[in-house]
Image 1 (spheres, one colour):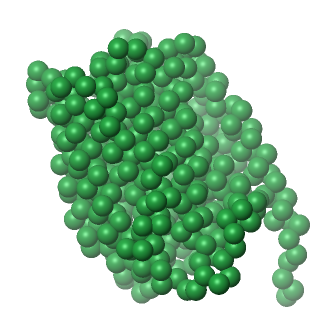
Image 2: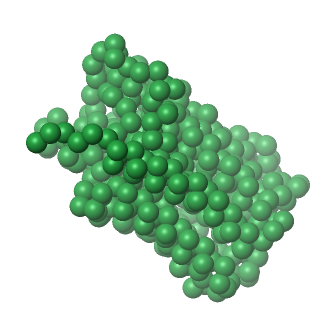
Length: 397
């Protein structure tokens, strides 16, 4: 694809990514608080976020296969339509004090989220081969838009439908999803069906046994699962510690900035130092984040922990996505990407569902200690991949 068209696609996809995340930040910030307000059993406070990630996980493979048939652009527009519906339904559910209906709105938001996960793959499909990691990073840069405006819009729109709290924020999320349709309608990505014949495609079980696939999926899934585990619990933990909503909004804003600002240089760092260096650095940052979180309950502790959590997510997620491209051939793309996204968001669903119960039963420290076993497993899998790369025969010069 010509460089000019590639850059245009990146700009449009990054803009759409940012607008989606403005809506997504609203759900993350307020869904737990709304759940606590509407649910009779307070242990179910974070269930709406879990339902949203379940909706994402269950939609990833169907959406991948659908986009294979109808193309990326139309698939993305279907996703944005789900986002419009989710925000409007969420606002209505709050006005009706219906926890079940709010969970259904979150499920619909999950469909939107599933579609947006393919923005980065769409960028890869239109990028020159030497720019794959940079393409992923640049699309994720759209998250800076959400970091700058998302929490502020969410906080200041929460009383739009006063006296009903939070409903206005979800109505605003619905309107933002409408705006996301504008850049998506301009994206020009070759239809996945045009990627060549499928005669040499391997069975999925063969693809999934590769060290590259296992390491890629574990890094991406760990990054999302642990990030959601901690971020979902943060508004509830800060509220319990007596912080005001604007304090929580500031911490979430810095967290989201930390998730996406590294995308200015993550792709270049991978290009210069290699995927493994970035993946191991991300794992180390998750550990340092937990140390800050468990060292106290001051604003500095929450802020530093969430900033480090965001950078750690970026390194593992961008690195894992880049590594995944080594595990499939063009004819295997749709099914491999679909399974990857399913596993990633099944992990995120587990993290979000466990978050509320773990926080209420065992406390904030337990939420952060819970990251340890998953990081250990991912570390071992990444070492295995590194060893398999060293054992591969090198091409003769």
